[in-house]
Amino acid sequence: MAQTAEWAATAESAGDYVGALAWLDVLEVVLGGLDEPLGAMRRRCVRLLAADASTDGHTGPRPRRPAESASEQVVN
Image (cartoon, rainbow, N blue to C red; front, side, top):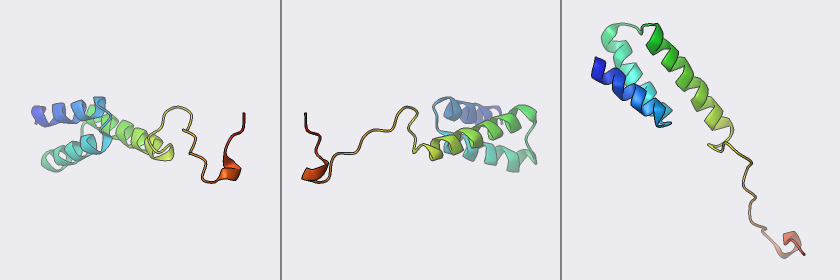
């Protein structure tokens, strides 16, 4: 179980929140529930995954899309 918890923590620290949640699901089934530290990790991963989804994974300003037509071309 310790190895599985370590894999969840490693996935979380790498930004792989889906992977971390998958490992936490395994632990929850095997253990019949998660203790507070693992429950906190689950809540954190869910929150961070939702934040990534709301920004399409972008943490800074959104990149500008290329102009699609001549009328949208920037003129200097």
